[in-house]
Length: 396
Image 1 (cartoon, rainbow, N blue to C red):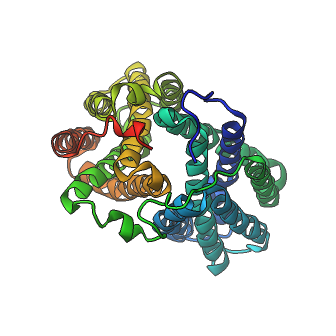
Image 2: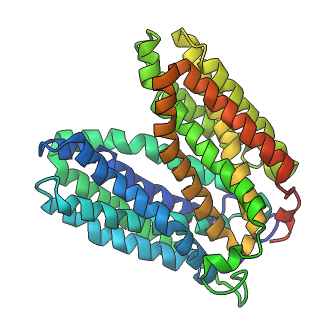
């Protein structure tokens, strides 16, 4: 299952799998503008939110199970299963004529296909990278998602303007077909007998020997980071308006650029220096940046905080996700990735209403200060209680 130590990072199969992940992400990110289409039917905002939100709920719920299946049966075939579900589902959006049960059902099915294919494709990419550069592979995979996340909505806007909803659905289907082609051309990673960790596809079987307190400490970190990420991203536009800053778009641009550049340049830092040795300074950068955001009153400082926030995010993602992989064992990589992503998304989902409530009570500036304090506290507990995993990457 493993790539030879010292093998080229940019090998053919890794690049094909990475392209498959990028095209998959592009296909799904086009649907970020589905609310624009649904608004044409005159539904309430709550109804649109329900249709959009069921996608994430289904994806979060099924990721751990199919992540575990990818560990046992191989990421390639599980990725193709998820892609098949999406390819069957997306053309059915052509029959959507209102904001009723059909788009709700299709979004749920799309969430199922996305949750399966995303988890399995990431696991497949990481399997095809050199074993001693796992953190770098996770960082580069994250870059592909960031780029697709930025390009997808821009392309969707142009597609809707040129040809309406139908053109958007057809474009999504084309990206899915391209993803399937890349995955099929990628070398299949054969799983030796017993390579599924504890055996079987049971998530509980893998986690049964993990002390619950240790699991709670480690699992809380991506939740807190997801919540803080939500506070930073979702409220920055209204915070900027409240502070008299008219333009906030450059904040998102420099955030993404800094995260991308950091992952390419320093994505393998935790492979060389140890996971916790990177997680701590990255978390401190993010937390201190939140305190600076709370003091922003000018456009230049807002842009600076966007760059610093992207820098911290670019460091924390490969180090923390790889720490969880090391903790659960390389044979359980798919499960570890799926748990990390699900916990992060849960944090995003819970953090937004919580920090929104804090801003209602005390204002946006105190919201960011509270977010920084939460992150500092969770990081301190993690550093004190979580086991060191610096050398487990050499086992695999």
